[in-house]
Amino acid sequence: MTDTSSAAGGEPAGVPEFPMPRAARCPFDPPPALRSLQEQGPLARVRLWDGSTPWVVTRYAEQRALMADPRVSADVTRPGYPAPAPIPKGSFASFILMDDPEHHRLRRMVQAPFTVKRVEEMRPAVQRIVDDLIDAMLAGPKPVDLVEAFALPVPSLVICELLGVPYDDHDFFQDNSKTVIRRDAAPEERAAAGARLNAYLDDLVGRKLAEPADDLLSRLTERVKAGELSRAEAAQMGVLLLIAGHETTANMIALGTLALLRHPDQLALLRESDDPRLVAGAVEELLRYLNITHSGRRRVALADIEICGQVIRAGEGMIMANDIANRDPEVFPGPDDLDLRRDARRHVAFGFGVHQCLGQPLARMELQVVYSTLYRRIPTLSLATDLERVPFKHDGQVYGVYELPVTW
Ligand code: HEM
Image 1 (spheres, rainbow, N blue to C red):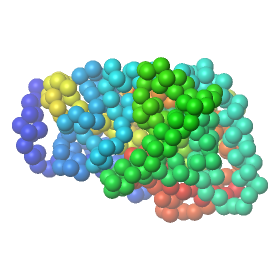
Image 2: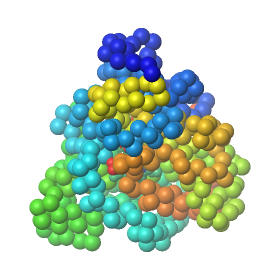
Image 3: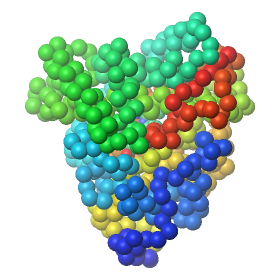
Image 4: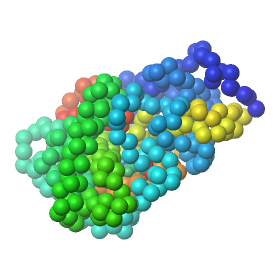
């Protein structure tokens, strides 16, 4: 076994910077330098913006083992936590950045609408939303920005309805969410955007305390009245669900469409089949292939952990680079091929362990409706610009495109 504590305590030389750049010509592939690290072994040291040198975990098996390990913490306030950017003072964390039992106490209060059964009940309404937005696009001028006209409205309308947030406020919450998850925004800028969202949700919670409706925020106010949850916690969970509920899926819709347009043989499979199993499989493969949460899952060790002949010391940070784990050739042969017929269900695009994505049944259903409708209703959909001119979100904690001009 190799004891790396001296390297950890001192300043290891030749440690690569993280995040690493993608290759300009391969916007869908993880950074080549991350692939080299994976080839060398499951664990490596990387250097972050603050000079710290946490571990990056590059292989699938080790990542799943560590994410399921109770000695591994997601608590952002612990020393050694490898933050992707400076943490703004007074920022509002929710249960995604907490450990059990606090994490479990809060998560279980919001999980009911995200079960597969409840999500399936929403499918017809989501289909209507998708059809109406496509009707509006077809009736309007072209080219059109698919992000603004379609990719953002679909999940925003759905999460607004579920939470009880007025969709008319979408410009406000979309803009602020974008700033909160921009890695390169100044900490004050991100803190201000977070505070605006928090104040907005706090106000909504206040209104629903007085006048409850049939939505998730109103159900949280029952917990507040019962003394099980503070108003501040209810607002923080509202912020988490609102951001997580629209940003991620929107990026999967737009980036997924771009990836399919670049792989016409794969796009044809979706356009020409009405088999729901093919569509469901395509969603899993696109989640694996694109892995939009490209900043990696951030964790810190609570105790010394031995893994593959290494010791991760208590207090050392870990980055579970799920983008490269989803391209681990041991698990996904020919990992860099987009192959909609492969069985990709084991991917870690939704994370793994207790923090595994709460909204995954909803995200899956929305993407199934979108991918089975958009290309069939607009069979000649095409990119209205050169790939080189598409603005990618290299600076974001969630990968995607800022704009996607399309025509038909
Ligand atoms: C394609 C879309 C989505 C992707 C790729 C995605 C990805 C992820 C990932 C990787 C995590 C794990 C975080 C970690 O381990 O640190 C996560 C957690 C979470 N996601 Fe999603 N997500 C998506 C859609 C959604 C939607 C629609 C919602 C609905 C509100 C949602 C709500 C959440 C919440 C609340 C958590 C925190 C869970 C916890 O800490 O227990 N996500 N998501």
